[in-house]
Image (cartoon, rainbow over all chains, first blue to last red; front, side):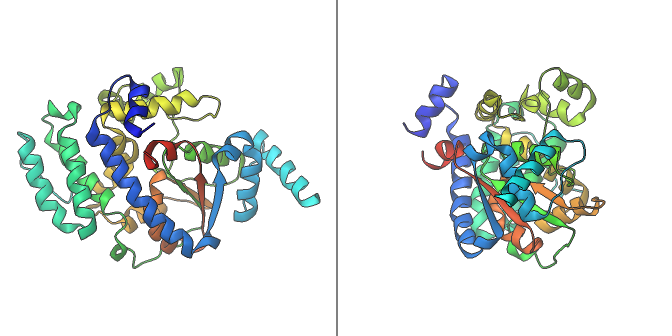
Length: 92
Length: 246
């Protein structure tokens, strides 16, 4: 299914072409440039999978916290879960 | 003061004339994109009937600033607050969700303007009553301010946001650019560095996390401005399906 068909399915009518084209042009250009930059600085990037983030956010946040040196926020339920996750990862 | 000023907006030709003049300040490879965005602005229904020259002027300046954001020549000075992470990636890939999770769980700071969380439901109504930004956005794209996704269990919010984007033309102009627009209006500059520096000058202390999907178009600036920051990039669904694969 092409983009216009997806949009039609989504909106129930065609989207304004100029808006779509603008988005497409911008992010297509951005993707090309981002790919070039990423290839030269892989150690500066941390890739997170969308599915991983949405299914196991504590693991993702733990990985980012480990990499960036963050500490959990006091009183945060997720922060506590992140800390437990980090402890498990370290003890594994 | 804005960089480019308009004597009046009487019709679309006035706006296009402004675009023709102001594009000359942009890097060559960005000029066509700027022209396309301004042309798109002229076709925007909410603005067709609007003769508020100040608003239109701000929008044009915001567009100019946005398109010129990645100009390497802007980045001769490196600000050095403790920016530890920069969340990038394509729009609609849950960058806000990750930002929210980090804010909720970690002792990190977020600079005003890099944060775009908005409440939903009744909270949105209260926000609309109290926030000028919410009123402005709501007047142009009703509901837009209230539906940015903050929960993975509510994917329809994300879809609704995209739907409004496509229906109203306004996401790029208002969803992403509002803070840039405000900064540009105050500082009379369109450079990435000045926008970032102004944000960072208001930062108090502690490790910082910056977030914007539009950083994906700005990685060279990010790498140079914050040489020790990790760029956290979310990959995969759903944006690849919408904007990259066609």
